[in-house]
Amino acid sequence: MPGEDSKLPFYAKVAIFLVGLIALLAIMYIAKSIIIPLVFSVIFAIVLHPVVSFFVRLKINRIFAIVITMFLTFLVIAAIGAVLISQASRLGESWPILVEKFTSIINQNISDAADYFNKDPQKIHEWITKTQGEIINSSTAAIGQTILILGNGLVILLLIPFYIFMILFYRPLLLEFVIRISGSNYESHVKVIVSQIKNVIQRYLVGLIIEAGMMAVMNTAALLILGIEYAFILGILAAVLNVIPYIGGIIAVALPMMVALVTKSSPWYAFYVLIAYYIIQLIDNNYIVPYIVASKVKINALFSVIIVLAGNALWGVPGMFLSMPLLAIIKLICDHIDPLKPWGFLLGDTMPPILKIQKIFRKIKSK
Image (cartoon, rainbow, N blue to C red; front, side, top):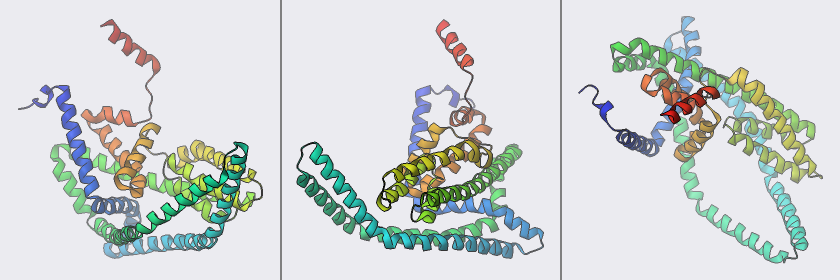
């Protein structure tokens, strides 16, 4: 019966929504090994499609255009990976020495604190040694599981290029399917949504790549000026972690501060690193993000943090990287469907006028 859904009481609608949401999250978690590579592949395919179209316009066969595009992408990723691996190997060789120096600094600080508070430092050191032994034993027990996870990750990495090729090749078929399943009455509406989703993903990811490059240059330059060792790998790592909103920046500054504490004679260098990264973050938040990364869909800070944490809980590290573009797509869809527009407004960063809110509350009180 038409309109029967509108007769449902509010609590029934909420219950149906919650059950559906829980079922969806359960499916996403159980099938994450299938969904994660597919989502990554769809996003990469959207970004690479303009390049494929460029080669097709040059009268190159579509299959060869896709192969050339993926080969060029592989070369770029391989070049960046080679630089990262060479820098990471340097850091890996010196890592035991850094850990030993950092441990000695901690031990010295513990001894000083114990003397100041008249506590026995030996008991504190014994507790630390015992804790370290437990951590090592648990880490050894987890090696098998880690190898299994790495094996699964390798399988996913091998699947993604295959998925990207197939999605790019069957793109017309997939778009036609989406249009047909939505019905002829909504064909133009669906085309607009699909087009805007494509634009949002392309602008967001291309903007992120440009932002990451600029952040890597600024981070590395700041560390080189301060004379911090392993400046290149730390600067690039900080730029990559900065992709994770709010949380990544906090993690990114911790490692260079630790290296500064260990390798420099004065602890002030760690403070200098913190100040330098803070200034770079101000430049990023006030100039780079608004003018380079900003897209048609903007998510407020509250839901940005929530979705990153939820993505980590649901899919781990890949979920943290995928959370923002997926939430941007959800907001865009909500903005184009009338019953979902309030949800799109809730996810956005457009604040309603304070006077308008006060008038609403006055009307409620007068009733």
